[in-house]
Length: 619
Image 1 (cartoon, helix red, strand yellow):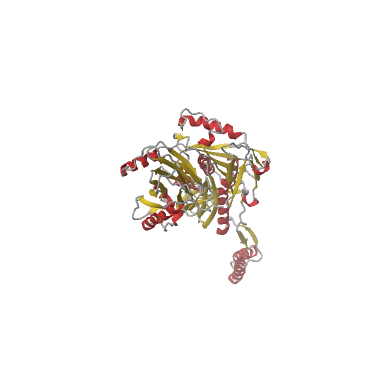
Image 2 (tube, rainbow, N blue to C red; image 1 turned 120 degrees about the vertical axis):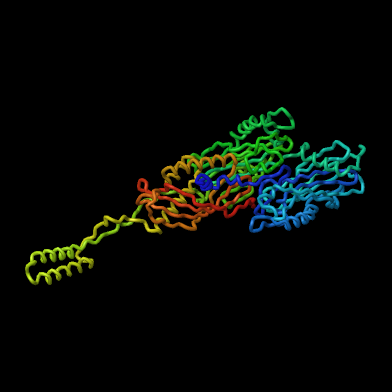
């Protein structure tokens, strides 16, 4: 249990393990709501055109109902069955409004929903984290009075608050011909397709034939004639600068030579060579200055993605990727030698005919989100992104907590009173034969006893039977300060700095254990390409524990505290943020080491996840 707790303690670093899964097919994500998942919004539209109709099949995930129909999870974080059914029906009007076909004159054709294949809806609803595991298919039909020579297709499935424009992967097939057209449409964009109807056509296809055709569209990728969407995310953090790029393989192939045998695919065995070529291409270009010094990129991640965009949530599994629809995800990390980014300049100066500009989303710290565009048409200075880290975001120095014990308990020694008692005893002995010896002795003894209990004419000495102890309030403050400093180690990027900060507050076997756990988590973070941060640590209880005779009790002047704390952390990648809150209950053992207090033992007694949600960055 301690190992599991420590893994959670060092960060909520690997929150990605809680990321949702996804089914194959199109993926979409958008801003707003607590169930957002993936940063790229793609809808797959398969259109079959005859002389009289255009039948389009649109596949969507259940999560779209949250994004566009306003469905909200209940207290158990589930979307109710009733809301899901209502959302599926309401979504029909939404699609008819957002998916538009126009004729040669630019007139909008009237569409109608001809079929809906819903996902299975359990009676108790679906957890919000599982919405990407369920998909529904809508069929829309547009009719023509005569065979069209041109059709213009538009889509506007988006929201103005989306930080990333949604895309539609449009596949058009003309009945009875070899025409296969593919295009990617941004919101508000359109594409025009020309049709040749001289070839004989078969318009009496059965439902099973329709089903077979649509099924094949999901299994293969058509050629794409225009594919130039490049996305850029720039993370400006106090310990590193990270540049995340999503580049279509087809676009990348126009900029560097991609070594692969099959013109249409890149095999898994060929991907490592392409990774090396990408590193050579980007490694010496687009300079980055941190604190006035040039910093070379560390390529944390170069992955190959198919249209299954759930890959963006975690490290992509190796797979064969289509040149027509694949993407390469590149994460370049820049870290200064001292591990602190005070200021940074990031320049992009590589442009091509297929990539004349790169729209970027700049995420600086926890709150600031801005647009920035690198463009061949900018002046050189306009292609340099500059940033100065605000003082309050810089990693705070974690200082040792000096051992300061209170003054030892004092013992009052009544010298005068003790003297009178001695005199009384001597008097009684010397006058043992006299008749008045008892009155005299009693008088001396009375005066002596009075002076013993009255604090006059005495001296103060250290109590040899009692040791100085911290008060409950002081011990609690020491424990909280050390414990909070332990989390602050996550603010420092380099391994040496992390160890130094940990050693300021932790000692003994626990130091090595925490350090190893933290480094393992940081390596996982690098593999996943996520920016992990502890946002807050709040304490619900810090209580000094009474000393006992237990063998694991801290030796004086050490002490133990019962602590209950709430950790809020985030993991961010590709423009979306996973937020988690975990409540821990534990016991900390604190002991002095070289004049400073250190945590030497930590026992986790319980843990509970209080909240979990995923959001997308907004401007």
